[in-house]
Length: 102
Image (cartoon, rainbow, N blue to C red; front, side, top):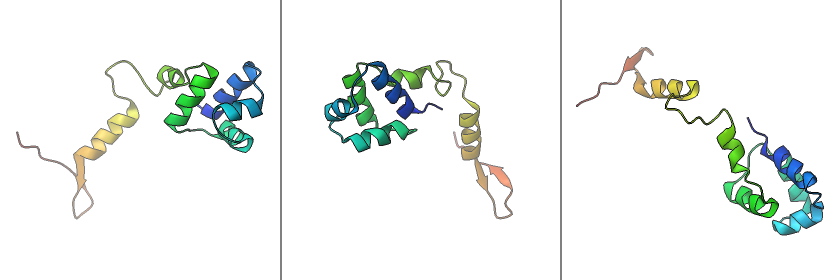
């Protein structure tokens, strides 16, 4: 999983932008910026703003990660979720397939 805060911190330091200047550019305090650096996840609106300020598309990190693929093969997690959704529990706690009407 991507630790987005670390990636943002790396870009800020790579560009040699002072924290106070970066904080001002994204309309946040220095304390909030240091908090952002520690975050594993982030609001998309804030990430968009940070991407604009640092002239770096942080969204591409998610696209390039193993979490998202371009093929039609479902991941193990999505296959498990689909299977769980297609099962329902009966009174004796045994899974039973849902019946579909066509």
